[in-house]
Picture 1 (spheres, helix red, strand yellow):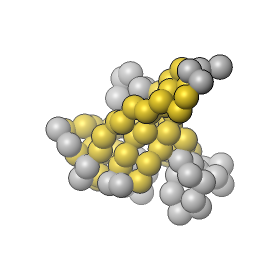
Picture 2 (picture 1 turned 120 degrees about the vertical axis):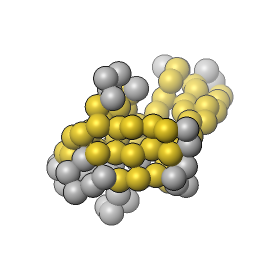
Picture 3 (picture 1 turned 90 degrees about the horizontal axis):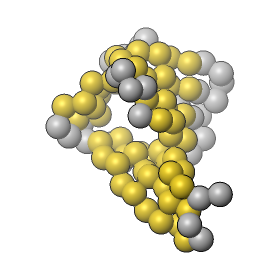
Length: 89
């Protein structure tokens, strides 16, 4: 649940937003937004969005500290990382 930022690469979405109800939104640099449903099964994740579905064989969330009270989480989808800040000013 929450919003994760990508690396700005034009061929991928810039942000991914998950809702508590299983909804997902893919936000692209161009302003396009694809909305649909996310289904997680053990280590795989499928996003049912227009132009999809998009299937990821491996997904994980990895927490890390950046110092000075800042903590982040990486959402890794088949080796591509999206990040969000979880604490800090």
